[in-house]
Amino acid sequence: MKFNKNIGMILLAVFLIIDGLLGFGLNLGPGIFVLYLVALAAGVFILIGK
Image (tube, rainbow, N blue to C red):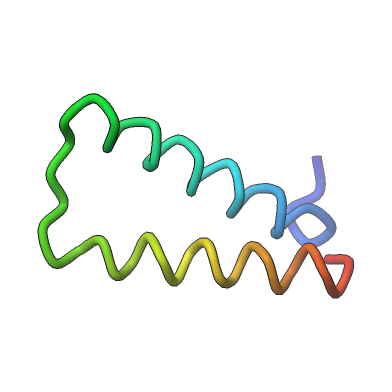
């Protein structure tokens, strides 16, 4: 797996894993903002094809 070609999918995977952990009671507090940034970056990278 090449990191440069799949960065959008890697970020999406990280987002989904963290989001799933939130469903089990993981509390990020104000760090939830970082989760939203990861989701935004994943969407952008997937759209531009990286």
